[in-house]
Length: 356
Image (tube, rainbow, N blue to C red; front, side, top):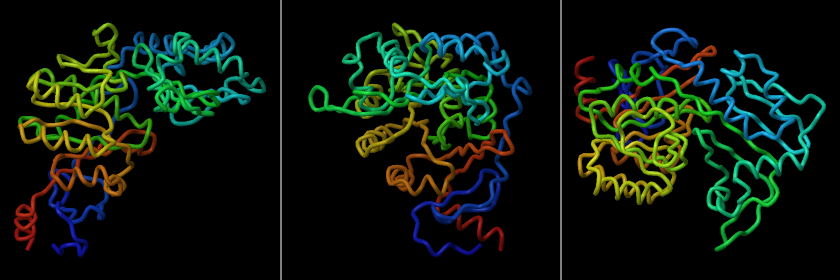
């Protein structure tokens, strides 16, 4: 096997195959260690339809009355498949179904008053209380739902930018699907869990998979969860509203301080979190990795090659923090999970010698 001429520190290959990626930039066709998610209601996946309907109802409950009525023009099956509502000032409200947008208020655009009412409902009429979250472009909602927003910004207290006039909302409906964790555990070296990164485009199921892996791992390990955006466990009064198993949860703080706190106080085997975004997070992850702690995290990227173009994640991979990468792709309307595993330099040599 010839080595790629691009200089690299690590090599990656598909688990259980002899094909090796000898550079962060070379990607082979996804095959080998893969899993394709069955259609809804099939296979081992457990989707409580009554609970999913309740999640739709609670998410739609934040909508002003006219928009709420429009949401309930969907059929029962469509309500179970709804992923998010898109609400834009002066334009029609849409719902995302199976990756496609459908207009719900044809010819009756959303008014400024309805935009203001939705923000008031989401913030309990106290915008200043949520100034920090608003500056980051999202609001965590009860039940694990999330309201993304953008519009005209202004400088709030302590110079923190906050929303003044919202122009667009993205009301994402929380989805809890059990079974993805068990399926992926069959592809991962689960006896000795090694740090794993879940990569996928927005809305492709990273949080759903992360949540279910936390649930499965916590049955046999000490798992700590950093739920910074309060959408993985959706704790209310300290009690998780979504099934994350027997894990310890911290919310309302950044990853850097949470990693230090959890490592010191809860002695976890695994720390799970959503997207890593800063060099400070990397420093905390690196320090905690020396204690023997493994990590489970997510990243916005459509492929391994795209992932390595992002400086934060390239740095993590070069430091060897993550040994496995799960890439979620959409294949003919179904989600396909491909597991990539780090290969040490001596393993690359052994594989090359074997193939000769």
